Amino acid sequence: MSILVTGGAGYIGAHTVWELAEAGRDVVVADNLSTGFRAAVHPKARFYALDIRDRAALDGLFEAERIDGVIHFAASSQVAESMADPLKYYDNNLHGTMVLLSAMVSHGVKRLVFSSTAAVYGEPERVPILETDRTVPTNTYGETKLSMERMMAWVSRAHGLSYVALRYFNACGAHPSGLIGEAHDPETHLIPIILQVPNGQREKLTIYGGDYPTPDGTCVRDYIHVTDLAQAHILALDYLMAGGANNVFNLGNGAGFSNREVVAAARRVTGHSIPAVIGPRRAGDPSRLVASSEKARSVLGWDPKFADLEAIIATAWVWHKSHPRGYGA
Ligand code: UFG
Image (tube, rainbow, N blue to C red; front, side):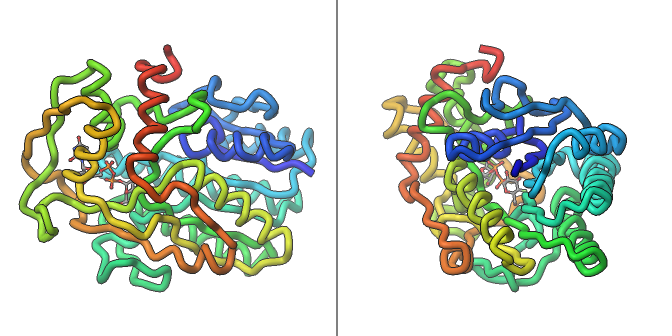
């Protein structure tokens, strides 16, 4: 019994592979290494360098391995890029998922855990956000992820495939071992950018917008540790293996931290003054995104371990300090 992880060399995918492998599961990784890193893949996982849009390559994998379930991360995930190049997102995300689903149907693989996003909600109608709240994406990235969820629902009806979509809020942190962590090029996410200052890679950071309708005027986000996310994928897979029905879950901490609060926490963790200036707003940023994850806790038994923002940042700091150039160092 093997689990296929598409995009298993990317940030959240690699952490999930790590948890699966350490739990003694047999793991197969498929990744085209366009944004992922071969070095991030757990040594016990069998690695296939392939693009999921390559149907022949996928068929070869499904013929060579005995796959019982798929965890599907392989996708493009940059909001700004998705607005500049929407067709890339339709191709890689929607077309890629279409090819993967058709190969799964052909090879009789019936269970799928899917990497979705808080971006499916767009500007929330209220916080904390429930899974039943309206989904009106404000960017192509969120639009394609929502369409991927819908594609799964229709394919499920027709072919008896069951799926869980996991909508993450702000993934962050690194594996507590310090062996794997976050590495994007270019980096756009708040915590890695903040940590570039004490790491000597930038002098200061710019906080995008100080006039939001939030307590300190900066955006509020729900930061969830990447190993807690990884655990949720394993629970979702086990839920499907046990006969669980199609479902959608938010994954967050349920607590919101403002951009200023994140900088302050990083100052305490690193002991560095981390100069920060307020700049103009970044286009498309909702003011507050906070999840209700009660459903994942009650249905999946998910119990995230990293509730404390400083503890989360501390794991990221260990990784970035020891790998200042990501997997190139
Ligand atoms: N920010 C700054 N300065 C920076 C970088 C980020 O102030 O240099 C701010 C952003 O404006 C935002 C907050 O930090 O207010 C968090 O930004 P991130 O880029 O780290 O994360 P986002 O909330 O924009 O994005 C996350 C996921 C996306 C997902 C999105 C859903 O990374 O994949 O949530 O809205 F689509």
